[in-house]
Image (tube, rainbow, N blue to C red):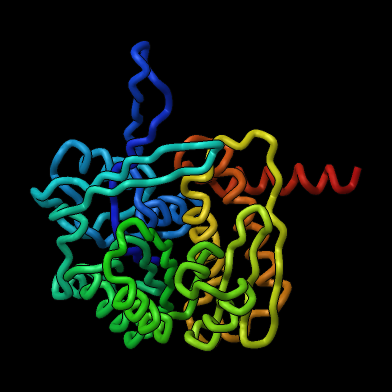
Length: 323
């Protein structure tokens, strides 16, 4: 089983304007770890979500989508309001403003997380807004380390949101402490160059490698594809080209979910098995993740594909390549 922690929120996405020119917003359930939970479950893995949800109307919407996607909710709903992200889309790419003060998803405590952690949990994934600051960030960091000590495979996607980061120095220190305990580390080129600025991408990647004990390190490069690195080899995969891009919301989360699902499909729950990944395995894993991310971009918001959707894409691609 995969257990996932981190924020849940409502993305208020500007989709159009009314007759007076005022923006019309669609309310989409979201939050990076929340999206990863849904996407991983849709791909067939057993997934549990640890973060509290609100009892308010938007919290019920978030809860409903998790349940519809087959995700098991382990925390009790609480009275604090739901976090909001206001999303503006320009040329298919999103920008965000966040509203998270004293909201439900930030009300985590270590004792409760340990109480609800399933005995059969094999992989713990966390990332994004919950790691930025405050008591919730401290709790997630401690829980992450405990999961590592318990023998779970630990997974991290920082999904950096600079607009929310007030204390850059302490935030990076937290990430680097977690880099020490992470097994699967995925981040984007934008994340990497924000964490280690004033360097070329290659130099920043080298710095990151010196700061982490991750057995699998993945760097996504947007349209340029992605790079996967183990202690033994490096793989580069091209992105999948699609002609009907709607937006890129949730593409990185869908990519991350596909990576986690690969480990479940292949029953790799031991760190030594992660260390011994073969090059063809990593290439196949990343190729499927690229397909999943591309299919997500064909829809508005985070709408990850199913396993069947990916297989259809692969079969179509094989037919075209053999034509």
